[in-house]
Length: 242
Image (cartoon, rainbow, N blue to C red):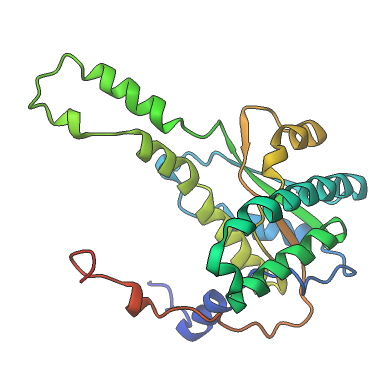
């Protein structure tokens, strides 16, 4: 017997209103451990390349650990202000970009008090694209010029697989949180301090910390679709630009 169809309207509401929540995280309401675990069980059903399932999830709720992570994040934020944001050019004057910027800054000031911080990890280190491609060229050195292997580059594929296996699970985790009344966002501001974070939390050096996801119940649930360009305006069919 086939499964009943999904409620498309309700599914689309979940997909289009799962926002990056930073300012509306409820910092006072505790998040039960079992709720996060439920959302993670949903997350690990996401597609994973070659069924590797090489993700790992570290949930931090200890006050002292969150306080130290917040210090490192604020350090990275200053780098962001002095480098990336100053080079943002005209984008800095865009109203939505400025709102997002202010929202991200607000999170750096409150992240120590967010009930839970989740760090999605991948076993192994990111592929060295240039080294992989160079090694392949070495293997092809004695092949005739007509060999189609000369046209192949594996480095980009390996990198795509590496990150492509974790981000679907991250997004599923965020959707599962949203459906349970919680909010989240993705921040990478701890990554520049990956080694120190690893020492703080016991994460082995051979494990890649992909990002951090602050998790809390939300203040209100009236989230709306974002102001986006229509997909029709940004979609080509058959050939780029058509």
